[in-house]
Image (cartoon, rainbow, N blue to C red; front, side):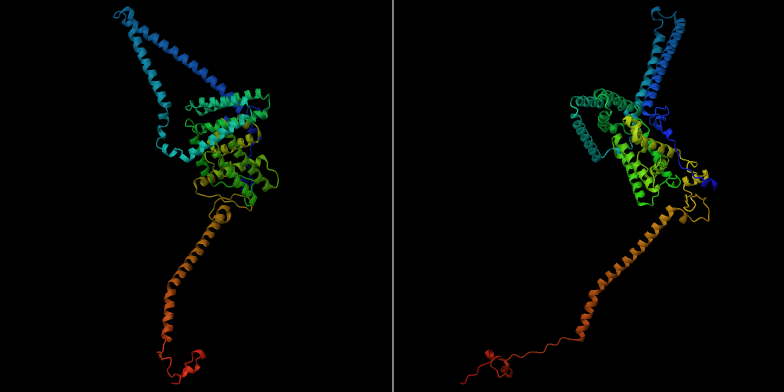
Amino acid sequence: MSQRTERRGIHVDQSDLLCKKGCGYYGNTAWQGLCSKCWREEYQRVRQKQIQDDWALAEKLQREEEAAYACSHGVHSQSSAPQQHPGHASLGPFSKFEEKKTNEKTRKVTTVKKFFSPSSRTASKKETQEGKTTSPSVSRQASFDTDQVSREFIEFLKNLQKPGREIHKQCRSFLMNMSSKKDLSAEELSECVQDFYQGMADRLMSHFKGSSESVEQVMDQVEKYIMTRLYKSVFCPETSDDEKKDLATQNRIRALHWVTIQMLFVSMDEEIPEVSENVVKAITDIIEMDSKRVPRDKLACITRCSKHIFSAIRITKNEPASADDFLPALIYIVLKANPPRLQSNIQYITRFCNPSRLMTGEDGYFFTNLCCAAAFIEKLDAQSLNLSPEEFERYMSGQASPRYSSSDGEWPHSGPGADVTTTNPVLVQLNQNLELLSSLSSRQEALVEAAQSLQADLLSWPQSVQREVNEILEKYPLVIPPSTVSAIDANNMDNENLPSPIKPQVFAG
């Protein structure tokens, strides 16, 4: 029990979010804790070393082949010199060696070509190719977005006049160059885009004479134009394992559906309407990130989500939220939202966003925290939630459900005497919903019975009316006495009662 009373939240030191090389910029788990600048330097250093190692290995193999050829040539010359013409002493073994070498090289080249050929690379995906084909409506929408971004980019560049024409020319040239590099790896595609960003930023810096705001404004438009055009080919490329990571993350979050807000020690009270509204908005923003095509727009969704989280914490605590409050809340939002293609979106932003946005500012801070949240979810264990390993395994397997007691703030052990419906707020809400559904079902049954009774009354009403009419006719029959017709001049006593103009006139004959 003492272990559970000492609850501790998820704490990440702010220094852990910075670059491990101490440059002061924000680091990234995808870059092994380095910022984009230090990562590029490290990547280029490793790549240069790899190139040198490859050259050294190639020279070593060449020397070994030459030594093997010389050895084989010398042995064959000593054994077959008396039988062969002096001028062709080395022709036989040389031709055999060359044939063997050529066959080996051809086999390797063929294997490599088959491995990297588009048909081979997509052979395993032929079954699902039809299912992955973009619908015509989606294609039309993507084409419309691309055309609109192109028009906006051209209108923006018109204000720059001559530099604008040069920028547009370089962007078009870069896009044409990238169209022939679809088989590159995700890291190589990222390197191409980042090199273009760096070169463009350097030229703009010299043109605007150090005005960083103007350079940033132009670079935002360049990024929007470039990445909108390249989005389909560089987001979750086939040469990467982003899709596999997406599925693993989604399955992991589904398996952690039982994690509650109390387990993460989140300072948010969803019973407060304003807090609940901010939580819903944060979930909506983090899910909306997948629908954006530009890295900057995806970052904007993360920033809006984070600001809603800060608002929810501030309303709950009646004081400004701290960094220690933010990360657990962000983890809770990610678990509750289970954003689509989370890893692909993180990698897309990491690879193709303007690096200055990820290194500083609130966008970089919030994105770094999102990367930490995703990494925490992957490694989440019993100790992270202050649970015993046995409890964690039971919750993961679905054999038990966590029960939170609001009276003492403890997580009690599962026992036969515990009332699950009164200790777990989720189950309490579930039971309330079941009772409401049962009440609605009873009211619906009563309404159906009343409707059926009304229908039966309507069907029997004409018969009852007809029966009553017949009874009245039988009880009070209609009797019409016969009438006698008399002549006008007949001696009828009633003639005296007729008015003067109608009274018959008698004339003496």
